[in-house]
Length: 148
Image (cartoon, rainbow, N blue to C red; front, side):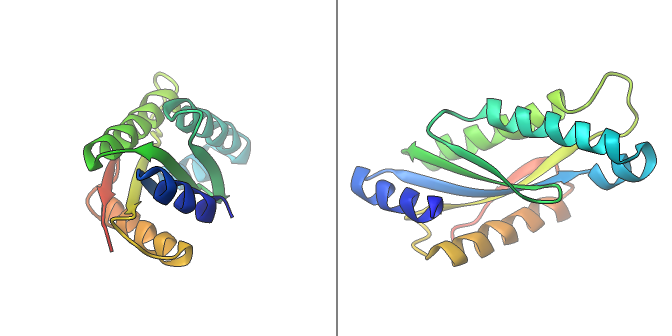
């Protein structure tokens, strides 16, 4: 519902809306090696870092496991979208990793931009997910944007 509402606002305001899927790199190792309690704590730290890196008009939600979705609204250029998502990646890298911990968590982010990608919400999710896997295959800790 939030995604469909964001699409309508983007059309009405003649602005861009980015839909991103974020997966935490290295999270499985934290859970496996340090335990689920530590994994849960790091998950909370990552969630807070993501939330702090975006604006009040944006939406952050946990999709499941170590995956999140982010809806960025009221943007005007692809460069602006990239800058916000790069800020998210940086925030996770710097905020979700205690000093001296050998198990580092970073973020692989994939996004698509509406209405440049003029698709329904289900396809936007598929496109953002595809971009996230491109980010992971390219080494993670980065943003990939695809438009269809």
